[in-house]
Length: 299
Image (cartoon, helix red, strand yellow):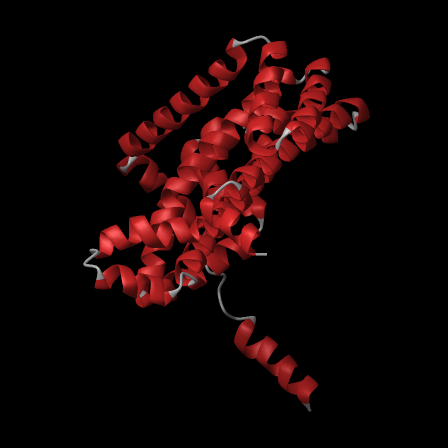
């Protein structure tokens, strides 16, 4: 009986329906946006490329040997001599391969995307923590952003900006924002209500309470969110090599297409070392916050 109903529905209901021209509508929308908002897209592209190329040139300004010492010094300040030694050896290995320039280009793209994503994510997370309605609206949007496959982010930005570094940076910003928003909101909501009430009892304004009380206490959680943002940005930057994003992503895509094991291994090792450097440095900086230090002393 059920089979008969399914066959009847398919034959007389679903099959006669015309195909919806969603693809044609999307194409028309993209064309209209490109024509109507061309100055905006050109301005965004110029701004992002200026940031990216300026930072990439700055990272390549010093010789690789001096940059290895700079990276090791940053690791030493963040976590100590053990991490400094690991980072120094790792960066020396990267400099030994032909992919030092592309590694610095990838680092520049990650830094630009992370900074812009953080600038957007933290205010949105603050708004969500202070406003229940805003939180309810943002939650399904963030769920959708986190469940959408990474490759799908490349489609609309390539349609609007073409291929190159700009679509890679924009797709990376969108892809890595959700953890920053969620953990900023979570950290602010976890602040002890009694501490907030005490600040308000002493006449602190809402803005002063947020800046002087809530954000410092939520900083470890916010830093954990920033760490996730950086790791997601690094993974997306590699995928962005498929649309001409440059850096190590383009090398990995090329190696996969040609089954070039040596090239893929060298570029992959550079990505791993870069990930270790960024992850451990951010973790070390998070451990140096006053709240994290107080928590360690309490235990």
